[in-house]
Figure 1 (cartoon, rainbow, N blue to C red):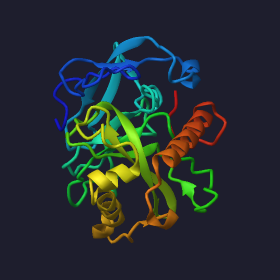
Figure 2: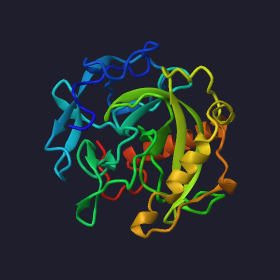
Figure 3: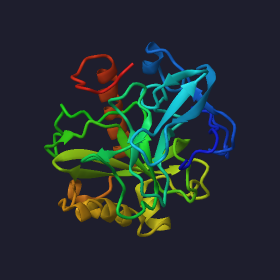
Figure 4: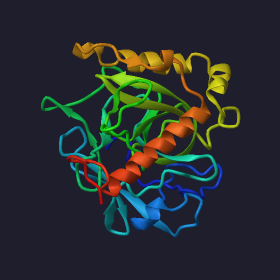
Length: 283
């Protein structure tokens, strides 16, 4: 199976520096009640073991990766906290770097397992490998009912995407604490689809990267590479190139933190039943 040969070790919110994201030990995750989802991320919460449970055969439409806590399925979208320790965020890796299968959490299925995207009845693959680890921030939602005041477009209805630029290929389903360095406002088919650029806490470059300007200094070409990859990746399917707001510039870490906070607010409204959720699955 792709990217899964055991379980993952991470203490969400209290992970020790240098902890591996793939050691064969159980995932360490925060298990919270619905009320606790709205508590401060800095609050000390009970820890419990979480494991990855693959079901079905890889490269089939039935393949799923569930997140399981003591024999009970949990949602990697709703049950994993957004905030890690300090300024860090928790990141769920859906697509390891250098792979092509378009994996994503199934937002409309119970407990939101990772599955391969299907388009026109066929499994979806990128036409070339993605060069970074790709996933999302839990407990965020780009609300399709809310129009961005400057860009004039609605959210795409998914969690906030993350492009993790570290040197390590992360396993599918792994959980990492990351620092958000900046973001791009991609506009895909008329919908706003934020791409947060982040670095894993334990990556060798993390000590040097604190803002988007640091990425430009220490990793020249990475920001433009991300922009161009996402601009063009759909064109082999006869789709138009994607556009980017704010003059195509990458927003800085402070602006990105504000965007993440706003999308966390949209998620809170979603799970509280205060906004239209359509077919999305929530606990």
